[in-house]
Amino acid sequence: MITRERPLAIYHEHPDWFRPLFAELERRGVSYVRVDADDHLYEAGHNGGPPPYSLFFNRMSPSAYLRGRGHEIFYTLQYLAHLESQGMRVVNGTKAFTTELSKARQLDLIASLGLPGPRARVINHPRQAPAAAEGLRFPVVVKPNIGGSGAGVVRFDTPEQLAGAVELGQLELGIDSTALVQEFIPQRDGRVTRVEVLGGKYLYAINIYSNGESFNLCPADVCQTTGGAELTRAACALDAPKNGLQVEGCDAPHQIRSAVEAIMDRAGIELGGVEYFTDDRDGQLYFYDVNALSNFVADAPRVIGLDPFERLVDWLEAEAR
Image 1 (cartoon, rainbow, N blue to C red):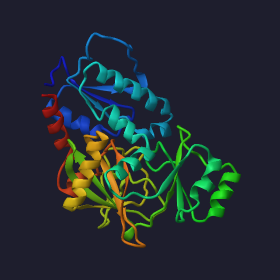
Image 2 (image 1 turned 90 degrees about the vertical axis):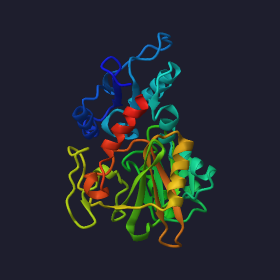
Image 3 (image 1 turned 30 degrees about the horizontal axis):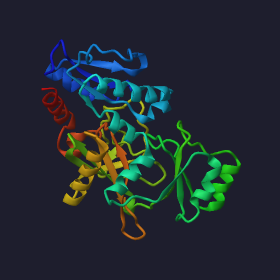
Image 4 (image 1 turned 120 degrees about the vertical axis):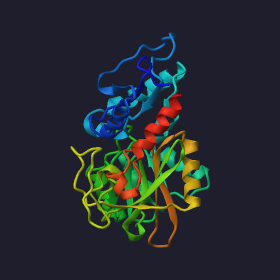
């Protein structure tokens, strides 16, 4: 149970993304502490029992390196394992975070469930990219294995473009020096569908529309509904770009819900989202991205007819009990 002596711990590095969560906790008078990865250390090998938290909620983002905090990603892996070794109940712990930190692992997981994912080859040096693209259907994208907010994803329409970028030293593989050379899938109607789960179970789904030029589909960054209404982006209003994304609530079919729940169960992700789209060329559906960090869609009550932060706090309180 959450008490003043054993509060709920929210572990994070982004200063603004979780303001709606903090506001809902404060509205209810729930005792919680913000555990900031920027200023954190722990004693390894300590056998004095778990820290004095009722529940530890991991909100670290793989995009932290875009904010000069890439070192905190790898630190977090060690800290989560430490907490779990001490018997601490961690939401989105080591297994979930490890899955989120590898696009390659995500595609393996999707395939292990017999679900379709885009073809991709994994490289560890830019010079390998042209060979890795052989036999793939162009366009292709080179995508850092540790991603976030679409960072570092570059599209190449021809083998010559890819070879030229390698020759000029223009390929960046990301902070683990690993990347995917992956077939680019033209999305039917310019639409990606994101299905969110809470407690591993379906919560809601949204369609996100883009012009295909941006790979950042963070739902909290969406600017307007499909009807053109401006959205209030309380989650990250300080840094959300005006990226032209549009969003609408939708109802995911039963088979999609079941597939997403299976992905999240295998990944150990209790709160997060899975994205999929349909290939405009042949109608094939592909699952392609697994996220353990969900900021929820901007202005959710207007878009999906519910406040996911209320549902989240309900669930956190139940889990702490």
